[in-house]
Image (cartoon, rainbow, N blue to C red; front, side, top):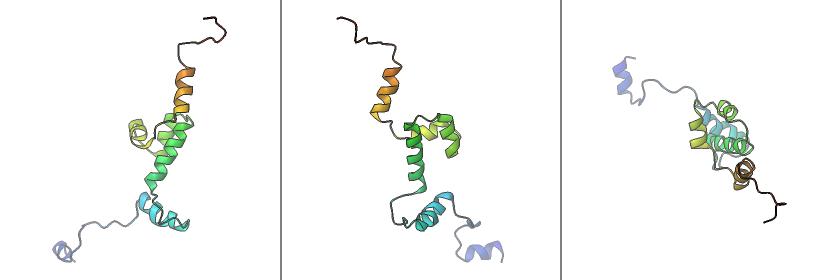
Length: 107
């Protein structure tokens, strides 16, 4: 078959996609095997969850970025990571604050 015959056959793409993307595989195969195929989950839902949980557990950002295969931290944290819980923010920020409050000191 020549290229013009191929175009006339109604094909939309010159090169057909032979393999599923990881997202397609996750949604169509993996979730189906777990009987979760109708759930509102996707590969990126899992990625969001993993990144958010690792961030909440204060895993070193470089490790998280490498685990999920991103080139830059900005992709990992600006797009995928959820906001840290207020408890984590307070513990981290207040515990490292330069202001020291001494309860024993008379006022």
